[in-house]
Image (tube, rainbow, N blue to C red; front, side, top):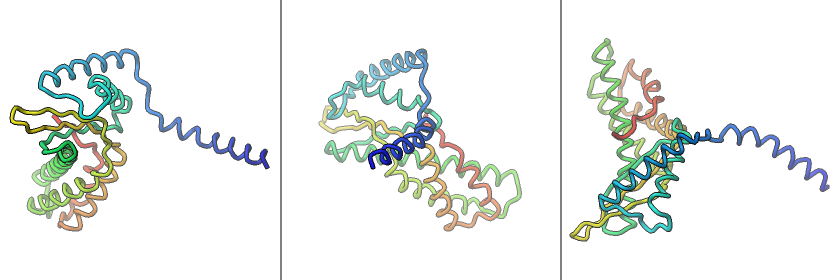
Length: 217
């Protein structure tokens, strides 16, 4: 019996190994690591000068920032950085507001990117779609992306700063897996198309949705 269990364990390990190797993120070079360390240190210096400090963390800002940047840049094609800033009366509310702000910003950029491309096509070719229908699609799409992404973001660390009047501002550093984000965008687009009449432009939506959302400026 023990031999059978051992054989199955070895087979499972053998079958799982290729999957783990495939999912493993690329390793950064020493030059890339040094560049990240230098940039993270510079960024933390700027944040500290602006009054930011870690929220309820046992780690320093430098360590958290370095870990975050290393995580993102180890797989830039699939790990999308998202940041959110918001005010809040308490740490819990402020942090949640900042997370919602970051997700809403991503959803807004997703909408602007897709509707911008659709309107560009509309102006250059003959299509039986109005700009009003594109705007209707865009509003439903943005709402859908916002709702679906809320449960997909990964929070890395949070900063806080307190104004002279006692009010607090929160800055949350997050990320999202592009593969999961794309699925969420595709689902949101399918639902949004049911609420609008895009005509022949409907065929182009999937192509536009598949493109990664442009990063924050």
